[in-house]
Image (cartoon, rainbow, N blue to C red; front, side, top):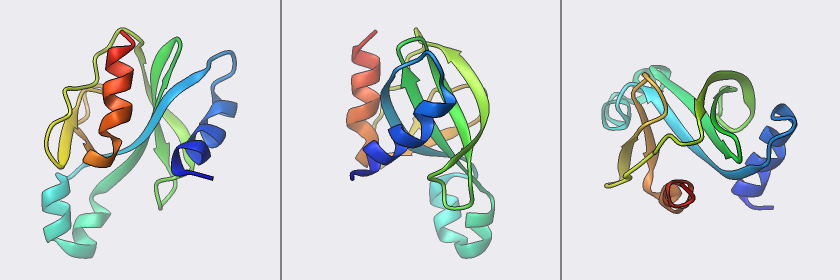
Length: 117
């Protein structure tokens, strides 16, 4: 089972009546570059997120310690919200008032979510 399939399976039950179209991991808090250089201390400053794009909205979840199991809804944004553009290894994305970054390996999901607008 792919990471995407696992994330869909974990977020879909928390989104009754909505259909997950795209889902990807992100992080907020300290910049990914800063947290990488600061080692374990830097990792402690990171808040991991799961971003689920549904047919109705964009939902940002707080996660458990390893970042793959959704815990609580942090925010819900209108589906018309553009997430990208996603450029560079760590792209700054638009998912609310919290500085949030997503890795380049999730660029296709971000582009697909924006293209569906």
